[in-house]
Image 1: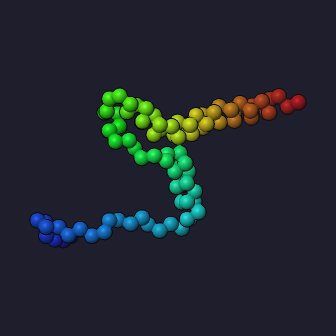
Image 2: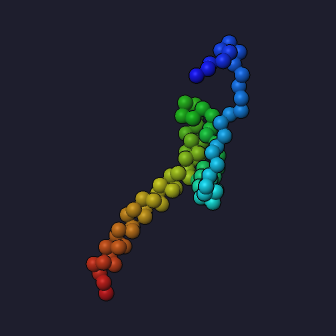
Image 3: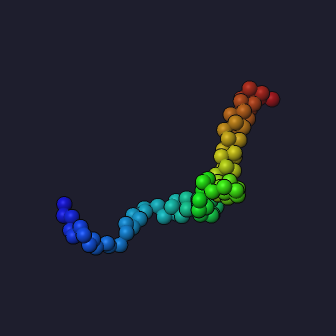
Amino acid sequence: MELGNVSQPAYGPGPEAPGSSTPGLVGMVHGFLQLVQPNDLPIGGCTAAGGAGNELLLYELGFLVCMAIGLLFIILVPLVGCCFCCCRC
């Protein structure tokens, strides 16, 4: 492994994302993430006093909604399945 000139390093282009064999799936995932979290992380995060809590809540709102829908499905799907299985009218 060659270190090169340590006192004056020469930087090249950054790493590139590898090509994908499933561009449709990659586009769908990026679209979902853009829908769930369209804003950048607020600068300062939780350390700033005042309205930083509101900014952080708005930043995480998409994930909270997805989590609530997921929990609703986790509870409702087995319950409805049990009702269909046990109460066959």
